[in-house]
Length: 505
Ligand SMILES: [Zn+2]
Image (cartoon, rainbow, N blue to C red):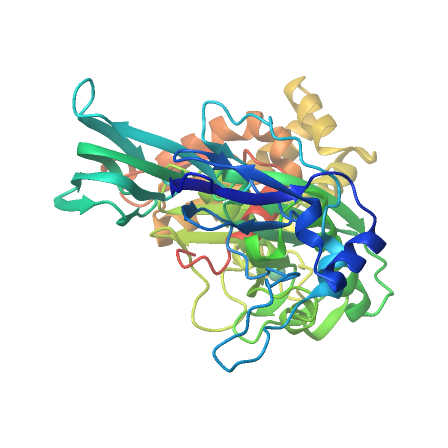
């Protein structure tokens, strides 16, 4: 947008066309140097504002001082240069072909109101600050986390204070208050433009949650809120590079659908089940999707021109719950994801704990019964072998001869089906043993239970809290963690993945 700071008596700006013209006429007039005849010349005076949308032909006439606020963009095509020459004595390049392709050749309707703002678009909002020294000589403002404030002094002078700092300013100065800098005061006699960016222009991140049958792809905003998501079914027999290409293209399509420029997207993360080499960006092995030595980060990078990070999907779910779900008030959180298998994620001091080597925080594979039941990992007695949803269903089948869903098993147990009551009691005992071990090692503030078992947590939480109190080291003398159900469901993995590499995690 242009704000006219000063203008001579007959000053005018060129702003779009007077009437609609064809591409051919546009081209012809450029060649014949008669373009000015069809341009819309707008007389201006001090204080006028023109909003110049992309694709609008524009030029500044003589005796005008303007302040220009614009989206960060480096593309301006020159179509007419008044016959001027540069310092080298040659005419400057014109960009006629490119301009013909993008120029809006229809006259502009000028009454698009931005009230109460001076200008308001997807990229920025401009407000005018006017301290006349009589009715008003002081204002207070606040700069939130959502946007910086850029203050351009149009006229007058005064002082600005923010935090401990005070600066004096005068006409032509430009002041920048970074996002989150809080309250500020302006005193004096002055006119100024205050520019902020809208949330839509704030950065977004891509989060990808890979499962064995589908990938969920989402866009996450700066408040860790999932803006939009899409599922993509995965054909496990397809080549990994094809699957990854489909995922990346889905992410790009989501950005386009939301009207978000790629350069507004600042990073992507992907959670994959299996053993992940995070630093190399490689999935070393994944039973679920049958990948071995797949360079996921490298492949995604072919399509997405942004930093990409990878982690185990259970770590991502824990991270998602820790930043935006059940654990958002906590710094130290352990999450168990109980589904077909048992995954775990550990957040300590607000950061994902991965261990030094590859393949850490496999909480589901802590041994709770020496020489116990066989586990999917090939070892014996792991927590997963007793408390996965698969294990629960199998135990219930052994006890009753029927194949029941977790919900039916817990309901029947509550209705005094003795055989199933014994199954669920044993299930809770084994899960409790695992959680007590976790608490004794990490002593988190919160243990979150997520995954397919979440629906049954209402019946699990009471007995598990009792067990923690009874069996954790130090009992009530120590600080005991809460146990809660996950809040974000399937969104946790997407949100968590999107936060990988943000510096905090
Ligand atoms: Zn195991």
